[in-house]
Image (cartoon, rainbow, N blue to C red; front, side, top):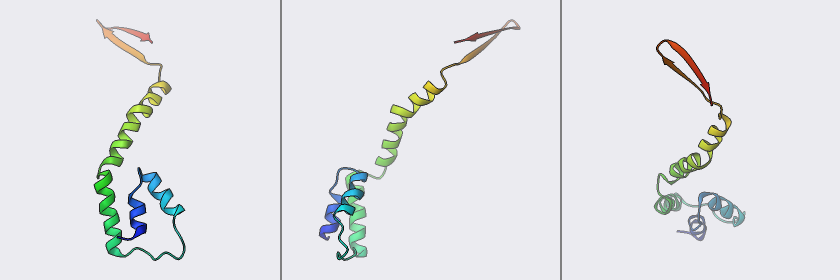
Length: 91
């Protein structure tokens, strides 16, 4: 595997992988061969796992987005029907 491939895989997360690869890119560097590309892809998934992106997205949703949805819809109207008398309560 080339030095370029090693730099790409050695970062901490997906965002850093892209940024650091572009920062270190030089116009005169040769393109990666197909074998090197597959080595980079394989190493990335060995390092990060196949479902890590989905898990991170779910964690972000639970930690932040659910809270935002609840905050945006705080007013809830409950209706309770008992003995055919409609009782409406606003919380």
